Image (cartoon, rainbow, N blue to C red):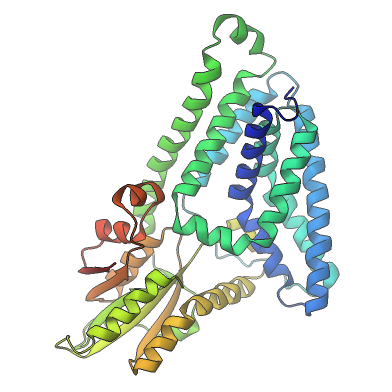
Length: 391
């Protein structure tokens, strides 16, 4: 048992918070989608009571899981399941097209939607957190009390942060692999033998779990990305529904826009360079929205997801559109869904006859880009279309 206040306690607490943040982003989006059509007062009530009920249920399920994991063999099974969950974290999400959930009517319906979605979508959280808690209920409750409100009230920011810096997802998956390794060697069936004969596994097993997850996940992700590149993009902006003619006398230039100051520098560059091009300029603004968890569609109608993504895309494109309008430059804007932003940008450019991609870097060092992940670097590696980078 981990004692309160020890270094092991704080490490385990950080593991719980980290696992819950990485795994809970789309749960929080369901809350936003389930309440978006309610009046403001009912919206606040639905978020409060839905979140309260979901937290109570999550704590109860995790306490049950912690108790069950004390039984022989179950930790070994849980470790294998956690490894699978960690690998899935590195794979592109499926952009499911089913009928989706039914329309969400009033306050009670929104609360039920939040509760049911959290029940179905939190199995991975429960297993990961129960493993990280190592049987300490105080640690478990503190970790959930800190992480769940953080996820609920900063869900959009966290999703965008993880999309912009894919290394966060990779580190989160490695963390789950580490926890799975720790979990396996403490199973009552093998713990005594390991302590007596193979104590080195206490160091080797967690490290091996982390490396295995990242290696297998990246390999499977690369195969999934190759298949995804052959699929048509899912556009969620009605303003971009008409096809783009590939054969044109216009010079088609693509500006990926995520609402950041870095992406707006590319807009300013186009405005400054507009007289340099020999052919008339045709500007296309592209915003990429993260593909939501496939389970979201079980609880929220597709049109709600569509509207949510379109509103997010419109918000992120607004400043770029305002600057082009002020400069008198015509443009078309597009909001598409994609799990890997660099692949989505190159896919869009290839399929729509774009002559040039213009985008800004964040001005980080090469080492920082390698660690944090760079969309610009990804586009440069994947695209055969000329790319101009603005610092």
